[in-house]
Amino acid sequence: MSDFEGVFVTRADIARSAGVKRPAVTNWERRHTDFPVPVERPADLPGEAEVFSAADVLAWLDLRTVPANARQPGEPEGTTYGDRFRASLGGARSRLLVKTVDRLADVEAERFRGELSPTDYITLLLSLLYVRACLPDAWQEISTEARESLPHTGALLVRLLAEAVGDGLGAAHRTRLDALSRNLRDAPLTDTVRQLDDTGPVDLKEHAEAYERLLTRYSDLVGKRAGDFFTPRAAVDVIADLVAQDGDGVRHVHDPFVRAGELLSASWNAVAATEGRERVQASGAGVGEHPLMLAGMNLALHGVPDAALCTGSAALSDATGPGPEQDRGYDRVVTNPPFNMKFTGSVDDRQWRYGPPPRHNANFAWLQYAVTTLKPGGRAAVIMPDIAAFSANPRERRIRAAMVEDGAVEALIALPAQLFTSTAISVTVWLLRYPEGRCDEVLLIDAGRLGTPVSRVRQELTPPNVQRILTEYRRWRADRAEGRPFSGTEGLSEAVSLDRLREQDHLLSPALYVPGARTDAPTAGDSSVLAAQAGRLAEAQTRARDADVAVERMLERYGL
Image (cartoon, rainbow, N blue to C red; front, side, top):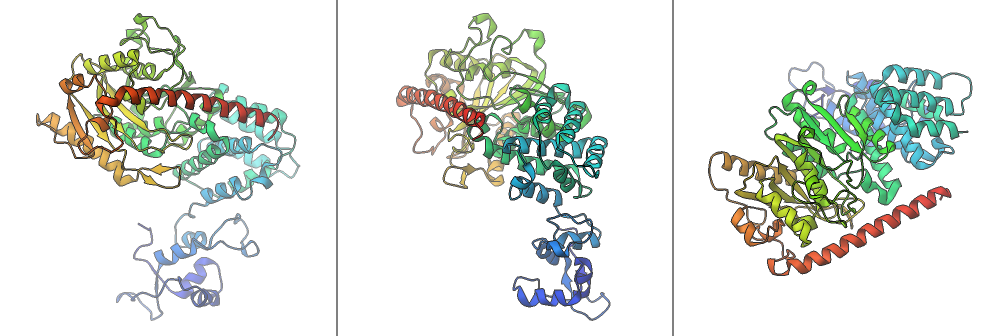
């Protein structure tokens, strides 16, 4: 709802607040059929002139950019008449930072990035946003330097930026920026800094929105490797809500493959909303200092204080596998690990609660890691490719069965295909818990048909469909708490007993059990054939991914 609902303005008010002459308003009315129409004048409003809804006028003016020759001193490029109107009536300028960042990253990127590669330029923009929002003293130094009359090559500004990032996130996170400052010869970064500084006071929420939009742009640039950075928003929203259930006493949220921090920040905020921000820790591990730097900035912009980030691995090994009993320390574990990566760790049975994973695939290494790093009473949510739920590989089948029998598996939620930008693979959220040695049933939700196409190769989960999933889970939890049997929803959910899971060799694919399941759902009889086909597909996808990354790195090396 607008801050100006119930506020009325005359044509003279519109002209004055938008910074134009009175005839300009009449001209707008005459030339634009979508200009707001006068509304009925309230009886208690003095005067006789026709009045308009201020909220309607603002919405219309927000779409009109002030021409360069009509901008007032101090107004940056991209200012709208709505910005003037809102400020005149006592409101803040509308998303001016977001608009400026969009322009800098898109239509005017070539003018502002100079010799920088597109990815390096976006990295600098991301870093500048972080410093502007979270380190005001450092930003003041950078912006003052950018406004000095002496010409700059940009290298000095990047060095100042690197120092600020190091102070905010830790010295290890400034490596990429240090390298840029040494190699940078000519880039108009002073203009970039000025453009961002001219947007005026902006709250943390708008900084975070602008940062996320830049991350999306970064995803477009890095192509196939975007899978190393991002988790679809729908999956993030589902997991954050799930792990916030029964959040009393939660003190630590951990993500062992933190990507850009989107899953950890959402989960931490969901838990902290109940527990209090000062009482909940956040930690994570990632691959490479650059992704960790992006994650650290993203977490800070989303209000996560002092997240402990360290270097991890894309494929679990002896160093990152489950540790001894005293290493269990997390109330919540959330992660979207790499899919179907080779397992490089120990195959010693003593290292793994449910048995060592097969060499060809680390999926069940990640699942076991999540379970064995939980505190008693803790819970985890892990995104897995669908194949993990029905794989016929002997080791994976034994691990899956042992996890179910031990009570480590609470629910599986199959999400629609094509949620990810870098792969069409379907995924399932595994909701896990600290095992207590017993299991009576597992909740299975098949949300595969809830996706909404947004392009030929992409689907999304709308907020109402996300809520359908969450409502189903809460209803199951409520029935269990009251000792009632859960009545699933046809085509969506079913609570499956342990005996039935045993009959089906502990297959966990929701589509196998949910009444009215999808017509493309596997059946128990063809599960082994399907698993073999899925295994070959996963191996082919892994090889293709590796080849894509190798080609892109080679092209970057030659500046292509």
